[in-house]
Image (cartoon, rainbow, N blue to C red; front, side, top):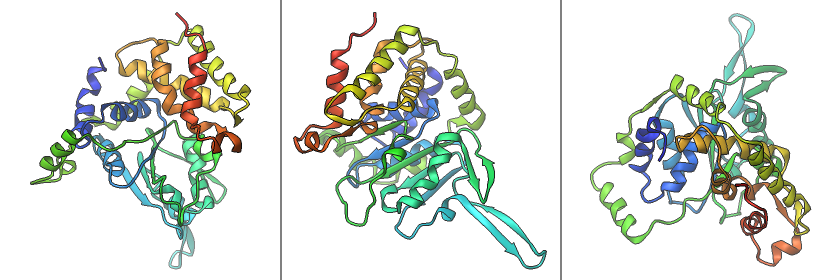
Length: 309
């Protein structure tokens, strides 16, 4: 049973994204943990709609950037503009100065532009022209990308992927659910009816409450055992980083809070592993050509490790 404070929030998201309860739970847990989300799926399954619904559910500043090959870092961060009347420079902040940033089709921008988000996602700040600019809290990047179409795209480097708390895919709806979707769009756009159910200060407080959730040493050892096992697996060129273990621990506390508990249990870790770890490992070329996926390897590794009681 999820935390009652978050019930209206979840209902808002369910009113526009049908039949995807677990995806919605992952989005809410990511917000509680103060992490960013990468939604990777084919076009037209609701990636942008889900991001917009989450942003509209919070009375916070929302900005959207459509990533294109000609997008520059200054288009995201902002820049100084010369004022000929006063003879000085005025800083014009970019769209990154918000609470919820939707980076639509992030892999269509150049690596140089993609890297403009790295500092913001990791440190909640942006250094522009040598000056540090703190970002307001909560700050969350929701990025979308299409994994099928590669023409004119730039794959996200490992350093960028590691900054995302979770990566998820929405997937196609079932036949019955898709009929309900068609009916819901017959007279109006469900997204237009969404009203904020969480204030900015409430969102900050919820994130603070998550930090008070207790994580026993046995749970921390379990997380580290999983992470270290990925580093020893000869099918992997790159295992999970220390940032990955930190993020899994933080997400587990957020999931416990979401489930109305003040302590973490192994199920919280197991539920999050498929979303938090696979995008942090790098398969060897031999493993990749064998058809094995990162998610399959992570699940296999977790299956070999004893779950704490």
